[in-house]
Every structure is written in C-alpha cells, then in structure tokens.
Length: 297
Image (cartoon, rainbow, N blue to C red; front, side):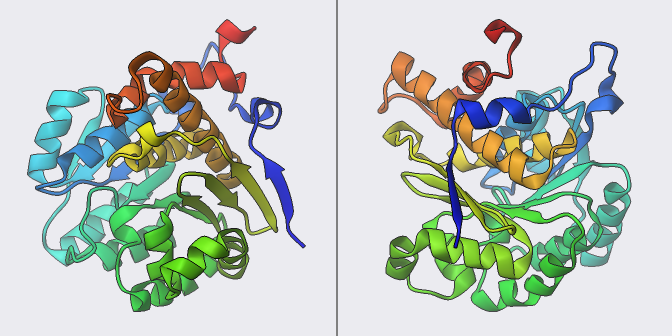
C-alpha cells in the first residue's frame, strides 16, 4: 500500500542542499537545458531562468540558433551550446556534454516530432547522471515511451518525468478520463515499474517515487494554469539535481517552492494578470516558505 505524504514546510525544510560560503561555481553543479525550438524559444528561456535561480553554479543551454539568441538577450548568465541538426553530430555533442554536466533537462519547448527527439532522449538517459524529461520528450506516441522504458529501468539514478494529465495519458496509453480518476495509483505504478520519479501535474500536483511513496501538493492556483509554468518547474528540478539533491527530494522541493512562488505572485498580481515569468521573481518567497532562506532564520 502506498505511503501518502503531504508536501509542506516541515518536510521540505530538511531537503535544502548545502551552500557553503567558501563554495565556488563548480561547487554547485552544472545544469544542461536541452530545450527550445524556433517557435518556442521562451520555454528554454524560462527553464534556464529557473535553473539559474535554483542556485546551480553553471547553466548551459543546448539549442538551436534562434533559441540561443533569445537566451543571449534574456538570460545572459547562461552559457550557450549549439544543437547540431544532423543526428550523428547532435548525439556526439550530447555525449560530450554529459561528461561535464551534473543534470540534464530535455523536452521543454521542443516538438514531439523533432527529428532527433527520441535519439537525444535515449542518449541522455544512457549517459547523463541526472535527467529530467519534460514536454516534447513526453508528448510522442505510446510506442516511443515503450522503447525508452528499458533505458529508464537501467538507470542508476532514477530519471524525473514531469507530465501533465494529457501527456501521462499518452505515455501510458490509457484514456485521459481513467488517468484523472486513478492518477495517484497509475503514477505510482509507473514510477515503481520503470525506476523513475513522476511529477504529475493538474490543478493539484503529486510526486510518485519508485520506493512506493506519493507526495501530494494540493495548493490550487488558477493563475499558474498558463503555458510556461511547467518550464519553470522543470528548470527548477534540474537545477536542484545539479546541486546534488536526489531525484525525489529535488522533485518535492521544486513542486513546493514553485507553488509557493505562485501563491506569492497571486497575492501581489492576481490570478488573471500573473504570468509564468513572474514566478522567477517570487522564487525567493518560495525559498522562505520552504525554510531555505536566511531571511527565515
């Protein structure tokens, strides 16, 4: 039987990664953001922005030229890596990057039919220390995830998958109505069977871990029901993983802090006017609510 836990300050406060005063940029890990495409450059900008604000020492963005131009303008603290179009070159570059980074996010702002999507996802699952699969990496046909399951199962450190209900329906091959009705059980079964952590997103969010635990965040906020909120969350998870957190703690912490940032934005701006990039501004409030900030001491 599953153990169900609520995401709250008492739980999350003990998860904060160490941040010694004498640390340097290499002390806090490197996050790689493989995200963005010609018409969805903003997803990479938001994911990189939240990874930068997670406390990671370095953030690299692995993407196409137009997305990298957007990163140059909006997130100048990030480093840039051009994503080759030719499959063999893209895979070679991905393997090289895996040797120098602590965590990888793939999929945000990338269409499921991007020709190198499955090949790059498989390469990162095989070679990256920590991996987060989001959006385009989860939006393909059922048979794509079926092929990737063996890579998930073989990983030493479980990957993190961040589907919303529709994406989880596609990767499980189950009707959306059934997924909504049995969300917790299905997420837990998938996590156990495939050695991964599932962050299942709806008006609520739950985290299912391969060891049989479910963590529930029931803070509803319709202001966060806007395209881009998930990119912020995925980048935050990736940044926490880069700093050495294990996948379950990184996922639970990101979900809680993300929702608390949204709550603060809601109070100041309102649910209609707030947009996902506002969450970046309010992440510090999320850290305070999590007991991770010096202002809380």
